[in-house]
Amino acid sequence: MCLRAGWGHGPSPPAATWRRKDGPKDMAKNQKSAQEREELLDNIKADFDARLAKLAADPDEWVTFIETVARFGAQYTLHNQFLLLMQAEERQMNPTFFLPFGNRQATSGWRKHGRSVRKGEKAFYVWAPIKRRPSEEEAARWEAEGRKVARDERGRPAIQVVGFRLSPTFDLSQTDGDPFEVPSVRQARHIKVSGGLLPQLLEGDDLTGAYDDIVKLIKDAGYAFDLAAPGTGYLGSANGVTVTGPGVRQVLVRDDVSAAQRTKTTLHELAHIRCEHTTGVRLGENLHRGRKETEAESIAHLVCRALGLDSRAYTDAYVLGWANGDMDLVKECAQTVLRVAKAILADLNPAVGPAEPADDGDTLADQ
Image (cartoon, rainbow, N blue to C red; front, side):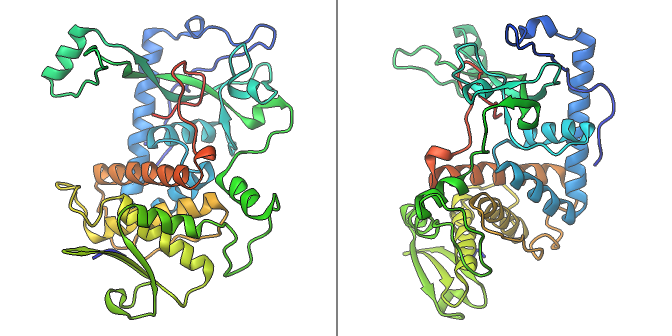
């Protein structure tokens, strides 16, 4: 609380065949014709727009989307989520975990984990950032267009993202080799809390060990945190509330809820803070109550699922008609949810945070 529906038709993403003998073929050798590439990009955009339209038209579709994203742990941006779903649906498969083939030195991708992509497997594709140092002419043009250009200590344009390309990646089910356990924040926290035991969560209990760390993140943001009796002060009938005003920066959570609900509600309030719902920073955005609650509850649900806490998304925030078919609004909301959930997961356990793309493009891309 806080004071592309369809499946795109047309050519599939390009399929690259990898040979175990000498590693992946150079991507240049698998380039499509200019016409095929244009058709592919048109297909991706059409599917992206169709999925956005479906989310904007039906609140239930948003809940389904958040549940689907939770399986990936908010590892990908909205564009890459949709792109992977598009390809997985076409193949009629439920993907598990993606990594690229890996370099020849076996220091990245599946090769780093002692696994190899089976011969003949078709790659999935995600958008990967292209990083390089732009020329002074490019930098001057971008700055004239109002775009900020990062510069190093010598005043030169710094190495930065200058565009995106489609980069191949493979699902765990497409590989063979050493045993591989999908990394998760839940794994690391259970190992930290219980010495490696991964117990089944009991109804009402919270065995994630994350509550104190979530409270710390709230306090680090400059907010006081207290448990309070129902109906106390600002709390009213809510499970939790974030209050920002002259001389007041406080989060209150009911003291009579279960441990699991307490953690979930505390995460919900942290999400409000991270989304800048109470500070006025996001001026110009359509931040009515329905959108704020949708963002906060979606983030809480994603993080809870990643931590291993069985948390069902509430439906009251979604049935308010907060989107009213506005595709741009849904896109902005989805991007915020993925960005903030990813950041919270990384803060709760930096060592197991979602992978970031490496400068050499060997790791999974994250547009």
